[in-house]
Amino acid sequence: MERLVGNKAPDFRMNTCDGDGCNFGQVTLDDYKGKWLVMFFYPLDFTFVCPTEITGYSKRIHDFKELNTEVLSVSTDSEHSHKAWINSSLGKINFPMAADMTKAVSRDYGVLIEEEGVALRGLFIIDPEGIMRYSVVHDLNVGRSVDETLRVLRALQTGGLCPVDWDEGENLL
Image (cartoon, rainbow, N blue to C red; front, side, top):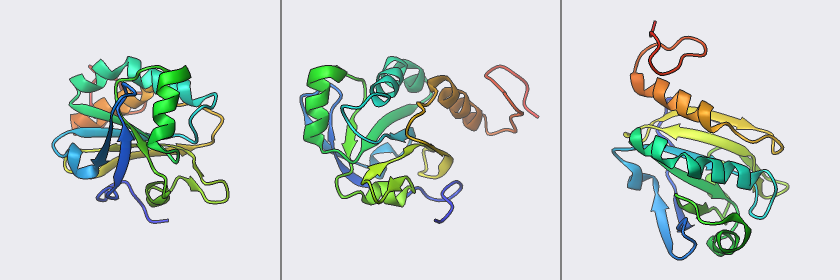
């Protein structure tokens, strides 16, 4: 797989379900020009770890918005599955859910488990010019940390050298 960080993020076009569970749409990488994007992949709707992550990011949306950042979740489920999940057990969220039914985006971002047709838990931070600045991919059983995502996003936005465990307000190198 080709290195993603430091390069132009792979382009995408996916169908979406709005976080209110009412409307469908489409999203492309170009829609986020001029803003930071936190895009995270999860394996499937109606599973166990995924709703904790999705609602965790949704609850902190104001923190992302303050940092000129949009959030987009992606799975290989359809937008119709996303809508059904939002309107049943997940509940309304504060960002769109994208449908990677062709699995092309999951493949391009290096998170597709080909033999299962689902995505690993991959999280990507893309800058306002469409350059990939951060990538983390891990096993299906462990949820991500919203606090760590925000810490890394703030660090990237400083444009400086951030030492280990750097957090907002601390000195840069």
